[in-house]
Length: 157
Image (cartoon, rainbow, N blue to C red; front, side):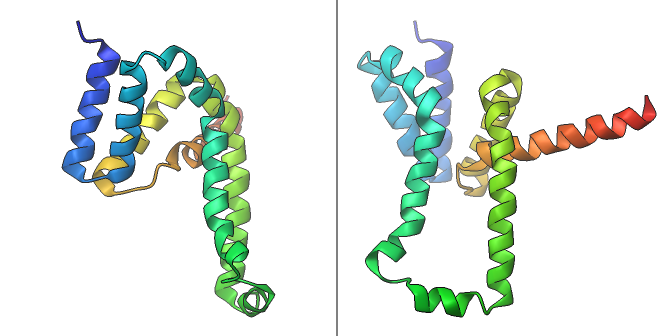
C-alpha cells in the first residue's frame, strides 16, 4: 500500500511537471528516490535539521560567486553605493535578513505554521514560478504579524 506521504509527493511531482518548475521537480524526485531506496530514516532528519541552513549557505555561495570570480570588486562596490537604488537594496537586505531570523524558531517549533508555510511555498513555486526561499521569510513575516496582532490585542483586552 502506498503511504499518504508518497501520494502527497506524487501529487507534488505532477504539479511540478504541469507547472514546469524545475526546482520543485528536482526536490520531489530527490526525496522520492531517498524514500524508495530506503535511506529516508537516516537522511530526512538531517534535511529537516540542517536543510534550511544548508540552503541559505548555497544561496550565499551563489551570491558571493561574482566576487570570487572578480566580476564584482571594490570598484563596482564603490559605484554601487553612490546609487540610491543600492541603498534601498542594502536596507532591504538587512530588513529581510532580520525578518527571516525571527522565523527560524517558528519553523522549528510550530508544526501547524510550518505546514501552512510549506503549502504556501509549494503553491508559489509551482503555480507562480516563485523561489523556495519562501518558508524562511514567510515564517519571519508570520512571526512579526503574530507579534503585532498580540500587541494590538493587548489594547483590546
